Length: 415
Image (cartoon, rainbow, N blue to C red):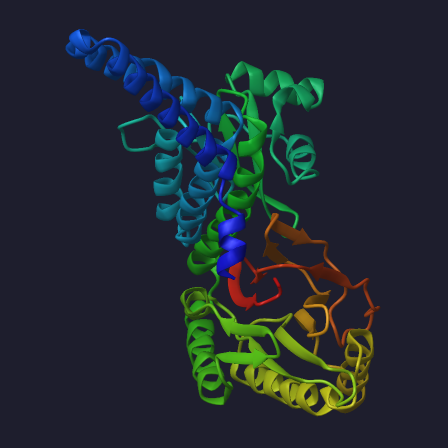
């Protein structure tokens, strides 16, 4: 492990820096040995050339080769991810966008929220967001077009009518906010965003849309207090019946990410156990019901957990395990249990991780960043079909994300 970290250091940059310093020092020593009477001039010249010419030239070469952007990009992503993870309510969205215009030096973004009354928030650096009622109506045709693409895009790619509408309001780039393919808002920018920023903003848009939907549900659903009580009881059941929070499976470690786990608004189960004796594999799961969290739902989850642990002992493949669980749910649970989430097969021989997913709003993160998974039928549902396995090889860490919450960390897949 230590040797791997040493090999990953930017040795060409370290060598360049040492070379510049050694050449400068040797030049100074030679100058002093030949011109002993001019030592003060030599010292001043050495310091001037070394500080104002050699070092800036070295830094410029390193920056041009990309070493600076490599590490600054990682720091920027972690800061951005930390900010996104805090978004829970509308006030958090406003704080996030206020931070974004300072961090990215944006001019005047605006947030449009579709509700019983549509409101628009205008943002300016150093000032609180200004809230106004939307005066003109955005037609159903415009809303339909905006909801067809989840990713942010330039206004120039829109239809002529919608393009003219946006340009008349000095909007050059938009990010639709979609919750289950329903348009709940729009973020508009007065400038075209750089390509490297667009995936970050698309990732934040998922969390912002979820926060807007939660804000509206808390205000408009008559049964919200009852549902809150039910969820609190489901949380207590989950807490008392759940197993360990950390598992060791050969070279792999599988554990909960407690910060997000405690904040999630649904009951979920997590577990890990060995497969058949001759297969040398371990299976892990992260599952939730595709319906709202209640007491009875939480108990159904733990009956599913029993199927998982009992069926794993006779299985050697992920597809076989998924099929066996699906048969058990359909045959023994009156066809009422539909599951969303992940099934994993941890293979010790080659340190690879095979993954099957079910349902919607799922994502995972490996060394290449976040990958959002296409929606598929839930496990145990009437339309369930075995999806293609995802195979992740040579991954130091894998994070499993469900409904915008990073819940599970799998580590140890990197030799």
